[in-house]
Image (cartoon, rainbow, N blue to C red; front, side, top):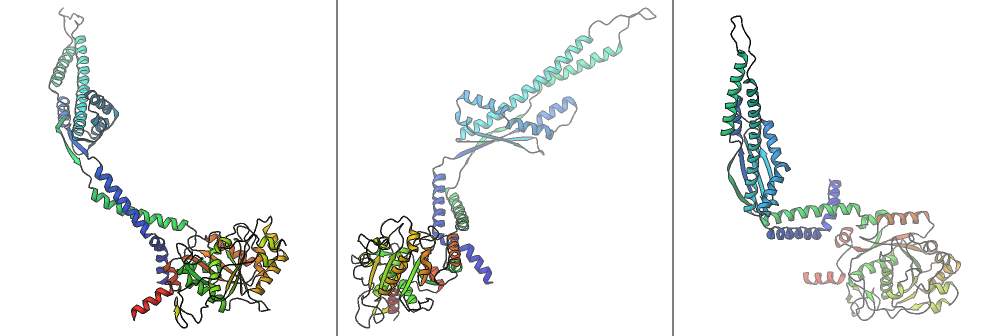
Length: 543
C-alpha cells in the first residue's frame, strides 16, 4: 500500500509542482480559442440530391432490363462528381459568372448503395456561394449525363440506319423453276427488326430526361459555439500541459528533493535552506543573510559545533572545513559567506580562505578589498598577515534584546552579542597552474597557521568535476561539506562527485547542505520551515 502511494506521488509530484503553470496554459488556450471562434466568420453549408432512378427506368424500359441503378454505376457517378472531371468545369463556369466565393468552396458527393440518390454537400463562406456551388455541380452532372446519353443513342441510331440502308439495296435476282424472281426472306426479317430498333432509339432520344435534381439547394449556417470550444480548449490545454510537465520531469535529470541528495551522497542533511529572492541583504548598510536563512544557518553552525560527526585532529586544533559542490551555481560561495557571518555573530573567530582562482567571489560577498590574496601568499610575495583581511564588525542578525530576552526565537544567553570576527583571504590574481599551487607544502603550512589563529576555517574551492583544484585540499582538512541546490544540481554530476570522494583519499564527509528547498520538502524532512520570529508570533497569538 505504501509502495503504491509512493509511486502515485512520484508520478503526480512533477505535475503538482507546475500546477499554476499548467492552469495558466489551460486558461491561455481557452482565451485564445474563445477569441478565435468569436471573431471567426461563420461557414455555410448547402446540400442537394440527384435522383438517378428515372434514368434507370428509361434505360430498363428501352432494353427490357431492371429498374434500379447498379451499385457499381452509382459508385462511378459519385467518383465522377468528386473528381476534377466535373470540378474543373464547375469552377470555370463560376469564374465566368464572377462568383469567386463559390469557386473557393468545397464539395463532397456521397451515396448509399440502398438508394438511387446522390447527395451533394458544399461549404463556403457565404450562403449564396454554398447554394450556387451545389446547384452548379448538380446541373453540370445532369448536363454531362444527358450529353453522354444522347451521344450513345445517336451512335446506335446511326449504326442501325447504316445497316438498314445496306439491307434495302436491290438484292440479286434468281430464277426459279417457274422462271419467277424471289427475295431472300431473312433479309426482309432483318430489315424489319432494324426499323423497329430505329423507332425505339428515336423515341428514347426524344423522351429521355436522365438524372434529375431533387429540389434546389438550401443553405444552413455552421455556427461554432465560442463558449463550448473555449471549455474544450481549456480541458485540452490542461491535459496537454500536464503531459508535457510529466514528460519534462522524466527528461529533467536535476535533483528535486532532499531524499534524492541524501541517497546519492549517502550522508545526512545538515541544513535545508529555503529559496529566497536575495540570500544576502544590506539591512543597515552591511551585508547580512536574509531572514529566512538565519535559522537554517544557525542550525548548521550548531551541528558543526556540537555534532560528533567531525573528526578532530589529534592535536585538538580548530575545525577546517572544505565546502564542495557538484556544479557551479549551487550557492556554495554564498553559503560560506553567510555561515561565516552567523558563526561570527555567535562569537566565533572565522577565517574564509578562497581557494578558487578561476571565479573568485568572496571579495564581493564579504565586502573585502585589498591587493593581495592566497595566490600571492603561496608564491611568497607577501606574508599571510598582510593578505588576510578582517571584514567589518559583525552586524546583529536579530533584533537587539536585553538579557534573558528572546531574539529571533533563540535565547540571548546562547547568542553572542557579536564578539566574533570574520577574516577573509581572497583568491588573488590569476594562477598558471592552480592544482600544483594548492598541492604544494606552502598550502598545508598556511592552513595549519590559519587554524591556529581562528576557531573555524572555511575553504571555498571550485567544483572538482570541472577542475582538479580542490582535489589536493581534500586530505588536508578536517571535514568536507557538500553543497547542492534543488532544481539546479544534476543527478549525474552528484553521482560523479560521490564516486570521486569514494575513490580519493580525503577527509570525512560531514554531510550536505541544500539550497532552494521547497517548503513542502523541508517540512516533510522534519525541519521547521517558518522562521523563528514568525513561529513566536503565532505562539503569542495563540495565548
